[in-house]
Image (cartoon, rainbow, N blue to C red):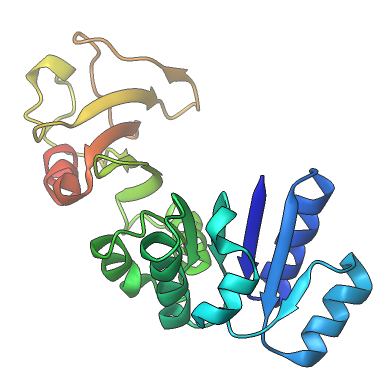
Length: 219
């Protein structure tokens, strides 16, 4: 596959290095002369110096034949522009954008950039698994359909304790797919499975239904 990585900082450098080692054809676009020299010295002639937001630069990079464009600069606005150019000017079907501020994720989604990566959000999700004040944790976004896999821990005295799954009033298009008990034992639930205090419930839900799902399982 031909992959263009825009942004030659640490993220872009190590990503390009891994992709090259896996046998992909890779081109890095980097604006800074010093970073360009470092990448060339370490990885060879796979770097183009220039601004990845400029059409003339990405044309020179052969974006019209790219299988995937990955924008990992330190600027969310630049990453958005790069992915927009790739999708709408060069008809690249797959784009990935790094998001530095998680609050910008909604804007990227609304503008059609479906694959985003936020290190901040990933770290927060890991931290929240240890915080009882965060009873619902997003684990994974499912591509297309606006679905997410989430985890909810059943608190003591929740109204769902002692009820079977068939009796739960869950939001539409929400599905409980796994239950992990307090001993760490996982089980695939059936309609007759009883909810217990301390259970960790893994569910699939629409992103906009997450609050309703949290309320249904923890209130």
